[in-house]
Amino acid sequence: VKEALARLGACEAVVAVLKTFHGSSNMVFEGLRMVTALSEGVSSNQHAMREAGACEALVEALEAHQGDADVALAGLEAVTALSDGIVSNQNAMGAAGACR
Image (cartoon, rainbow, N blue to C red; front, top):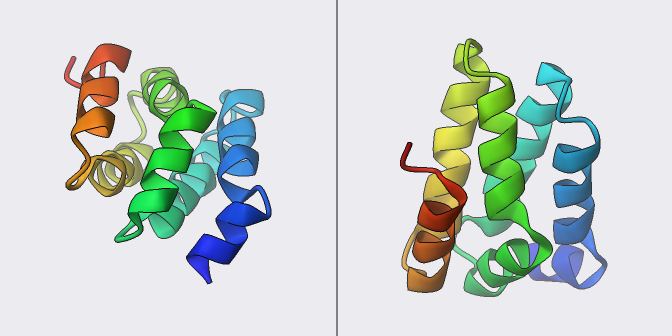
């Protein structure tokens, strides 16, 4: 199911939500949860998320909501889901500033 959603453009749509609504903690929280849900355990979706700009959008969203514990936890889970086992995503997360 996750792969089918990605083929229909779900990864790009989730990244667009993070970029468009980065000022809304509720939208960022839900967007980060969707990054996790789509990426967790599906390497093709992990790659698709990176290619859609998820690493940069995720870091920007976390920076915009530093005081929100729910967003921080959702962000940590999304970073883990995106990076797990994918060295190129780990490097992209680092380059985007996820380690700051």
